[in-house]
Length: 173
Picture 1: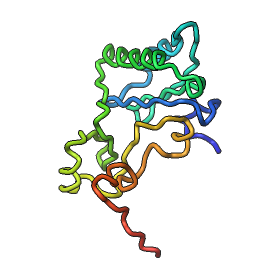
Picture 2: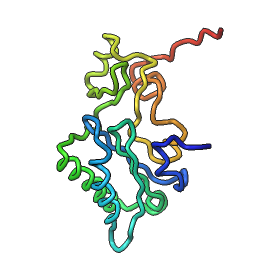
Picture 3: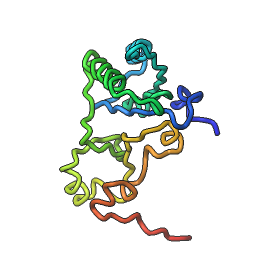
Picture 4: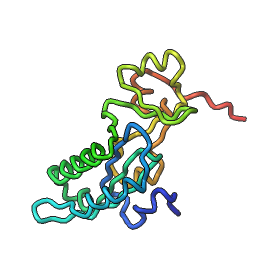
C-alpha cells in the first residue's frame, strides 16, 4: 500500500510507532515551520536516550510526530519535553494550539474547532450532523493514522454515542 504524500515521512516506521497529533488554531506555512520542528526532534533526548522522531504536517494545521521506541519503552518525561518544545515553537511563530477539549470538524468551508460544551447546540442547529467528518486527534499509533482512523463520521465517534446520533440509513440502491 502506498502512503499519501503527507504520510511519506512515516514510511519506514512500524504501525505501532507512537503518534502525537497537535492542532494549531490556523494553517501553518510548512516552510516556516520545518526548521523549528527538525531542530526540536534533532535534540530530542532524555536521560541519555536519543529519540528518533519523524514528523509531517496534515491539513496544513495538524502536526503529526511519530517515534517508534516510545511505543514499547514509554518515557513520560521525554514526551512532556517534546510537547513543551512544540508549544514553544507555536509561541515563537505566533500560533495558538487547540485545547484538548475542542473538537475539530470538517465543514464545507473548511476545518472548524468546537468546544465540547457547544456541541449540543451545533447538533441542534444543524451545523453538525451524523455524517459530519470529525478529526480524532487522540490516535495513538502510526497504524491508526495509516488506516484512516483520523477522520470518521460524527455518528461513529464518542459524540455520536453521547448524543445518541445514528449513522444515516443506507438506501441500498
